[in-house]
Length: 457
Image 1 (tube, rainbow, N blue to C red):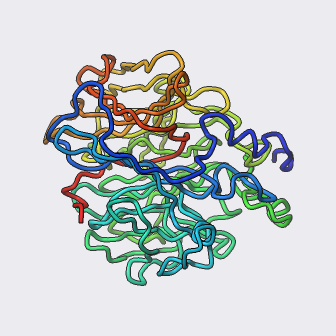
Image 2 (cartoon, rainbow, N blue to C red):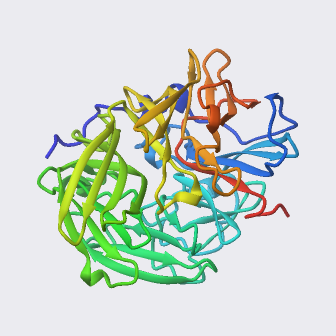
């Protein structure tokens, strides 16, 4: 067990520089564009991240707990029609603005979702883990209501659900401690928004399970070597997660058509991973799981990532109990994505953001060709910082030819841009740069949401 929580990383340090919160919501129309936005793109690029509503005046504040703010750009007919920045209306945000609480269940939590913004069942959802309900947003990013999917969600969703591109189902591994201290839940919601599965999976020590893996055959639970230190949690610390080598690391394979009672656990070397790149079934019965893997993490407590992750592949055969662990790329990187059409299916290409010391984004975005074992880098330039890359397919059977969106910060102007890269010529100059009126703080996750999934109203 690492040392108990101290002041190794202060809350002020977390919110300096690119992470400094915006002080107000923003609306801007008719954004300047350098280059050309494809006329066939019609929709919104959205990303969410922590943006404390009260700044740093509270007795304790942590980057992971800052109220969520969604940043979005609307693209249509080759134009960038608007940019909006909106706080998600958790209880503290609503109180700050003198607004009533959002309708819908709150699971006795007032925290504002800050981890992911995506679309499901024709709605835009702001998500986070730990028992905070999803928040439904309107097209202009205003918060409408909290949702538990018509009463079907028992008490938590995840910031990292997987949406099966064939069935349309949403799969998630969820936790909400300490209310349910002895298990996590495997949740499945069908394409019509009905919760069809919410099964308890027993675990010990309340592990931090940020993401999951999904294949056509399996849902995979990542029970890794970061869990809650009860003594620290008893002091009132809201994020008492520590690296715990004694907890160990294991992968739990649940057959999607089977029972959680038949889960197969495979032990791996102690480690942690926030994010799964992708996972799929191999023809020989193996399951391939690509992750951004940390050797060790939170050794001094959850003051922030104190190491950097690299690209790893786990090749597991749940029937035989075998596992092969291989490092694919040794450069620090995280926030991985594949084109949505390949989630849970064999993929050739994957995209990652480079990381630098202090767990800050770097100037590079990596495009991995997993068939050739090679990478192409996009260099955003001196003083420019990337973020999570989001690939958007141009049509059927075009893997590798994706458009790739991301927000990029320019330190010379202290403003951000929405940058569009060409997967077919990834190292080249961007296809388009949408100039934004302000800095988009470093945040977490988001999506390109085409109007075909959530049309404007």
